[in-house]
Image (cartoon, rainbow, N blue to C red; front, top):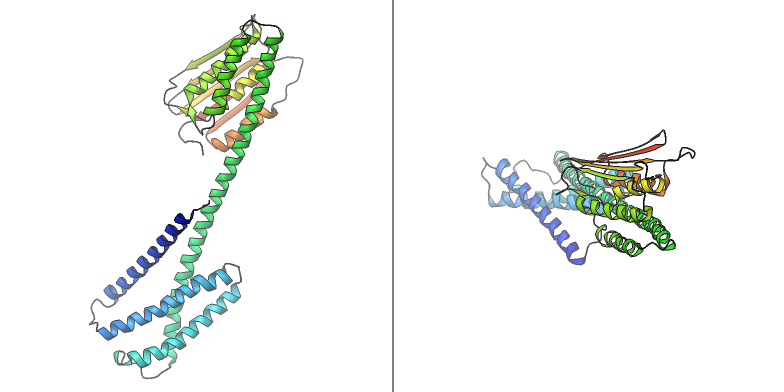
Length: 348
């Protein structure tokens, strides 16, 4: 994800505001809950404020220096040693401040350095270090997860674009072959075929670039393709396209159903004496069921796959993961392809 300079500035301002808010809440908690029932003089308040400044030093030295240079690089022993060194150094530095400036507010403070007071400084600093590390590590983890998810999304989008770029030339190649066949036979409806092709290409170039298209447009695209095929097949009329249900308001990823339609025409043996290709579309509130049935040669063994069907499988796995069912079956010279898509979740 590429951020512009204003976005980076806003992000940093947001982080600074979040840190300030966190410290203000912490200070309010100390003064309200710890000293709520005690008499708090100006000197004691100043003593607490200086103590907080030392905790700020520990928090941000760990945040900006120790964690990036040692913990983030998995240098655990150096990190632990550095933390202990920092805590001892801060304790030795804090002791004279408390003794000379705020001794009158702490009656028990009789020595410049005492084991109990140094231990108190170190333990307090250790808690601050732990909070600093926990927040930093958690924030880094969340940012890395978000970045990895963005990279994965970009990778999927690139792969989908590549798959779609394979669909269009594959489809165009087959359609141009059909029109060439009409032109070669000097069929009078060749201009109509070219017009149908222009409608198909308009859909593919301008409308199928969206993540989702209306199911009505996808079906219209299929009808145009079928009309184009009928021109090529001339007197052979063994084609049926049945639709059941309401298409309005439904959306689908473009060119998914078209792959099965293409496959049926590519391998189907259409005869005027029988129904060679049957396509059924059943639309319900939360699902779509599309099936194709086509005759095949009994003398030629069919292999499932090819660029079109493999492309379809991959696109379905990317767009409708766990939201689709795709199956193929061939028996007694008939090939069955069935695709069910659930509308309950939008494509990723």
